[in-house]
Length: 185
Figure 1 (cartoon, rainbow, N blue to C red):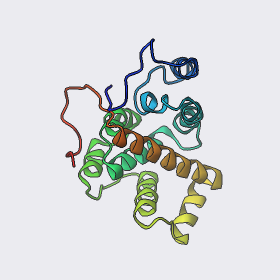
Figure 2: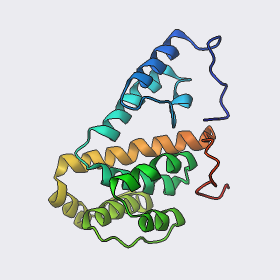
Figure 3: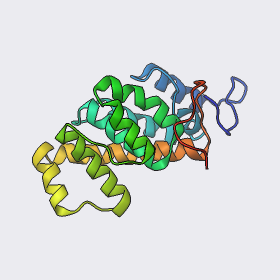
């Protein structure tokens, strides 16, 4: 991973930063992929954000397949290169069709065989484009998953928007050798 931030080394890392780095590495992720190398410049933010992120990624009421779809839709909305590169393979492993992910990446309307996937996509795109969810869509989601799961879904969207903004502002890049998923502005 590279970014426009000052690289942290053993000489310039504070004890607070090292504590957060150790916590992240010992947690469910086991790596510093994504926004963590940026956030650790503010160790208090990093500590809180990584805990929220662990919940959003591993412990919500939303199945992995649907949360990864929400994350990829968020990555496409923000054109977040690293977020897409990290989560696209996870989404495919979780069962999201590659034709769906490619349509999302290209900004096209995907064709869903699964009604839950279509609902997650519709909620995500509607929220990002109108900043609201109409009552009919809200009721559909509550009927499908319940209020607590819908709260979790919105939490996932908020958290991964923060991730996307962080990755974009600090130009966090992965050295994958693969072409970038989105054209650079």
